[in-house]
Every structure is written in C-alpha cells, then in structure tokens.
Length: 170
Image 1: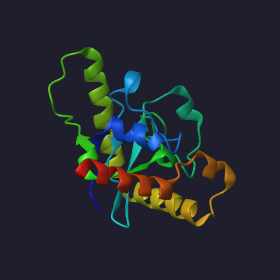
Image 2: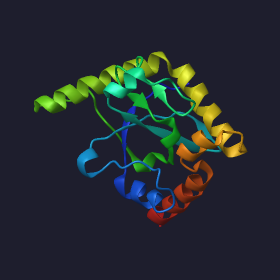
Image 3: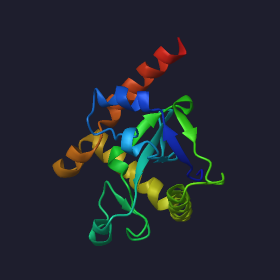
C-alpha cells in the first residue's frame, strides 16, 4: 500500500468530467490550489484521487460518514471520498510540500497540507478500506440513497476518464 501524496488534478480534465457529473469538485478560480490527495485505490487499472477540505468549525461536530473521513477528528479538515475521481498519471501534478514559501498564507496552507498528509499516511489502511468499501457499495447499488446521491458516478467517470485520455494522447 503506497503512501498518500498531495497532487493537483488538471483543471481542464475536471471541467470535462463536470459535464457528465456535477459532483466533480472545482479546483480552479478561488480554489486554484485545492489539492486532491494521492491514490486511494486502484480498480481495474484506474487510480482514484479524493479532494481535501480545509478545516471548518462544522467538521469538529460532524460524525465520520461512509463517504467522508475526518482528519484528526476534523481539526485538520476532511477527505471527501464521495467526490473521488479517476485519473491517469498524466492528469496530475505532484505538489512539492518542501518548496520555499514566500507569502504568509502560502506558508500556513503548506503547513496544513503537511499535517494532513502526515495524519493520512498514519491512517492509510483505514482510509483505503473505507474508500474501497464506499466504491464497492456504490457500484453494486448497495449504498443507501442519501450517500449514493452525494457520490460521484464512479463508473461513468471511469469511462469518461478513458475517453479523455485517448483524446489527449492523439
């Protein structure tokens, strides 16, 4: 089982997927630096990445859900595994958390990402298991309606990922 990494997913690819599923998160504009954590699982040669959410007061009182993982009891945010998307390596860019940060806000954000990543890697087995369980229940139709409604359409996005990748290779 690999350690998690922090990556940024190609925004054109995310925009493409959003044409087919409005639950695909944004990672441009005001959320340009919004990262996706590294490989959660591999199914049928597909890699999946899930978006991180920065800490918010509501995360402290939320319960862990089948489609959401609280990072350090919500103190460091959450992982939205319901919004994980399939990608190929050519659609991601690894974020270097050891680079020099000049702007104060960038330093704070970088520190947060390092703390999130450390916690995620310490808990990777549980995260992998939870993500795989969510995926399996969703694609088999065994996930309850509330959680199913909150999830990206994993199988549809896998097909669209393959189509997109063919177009950029040609």
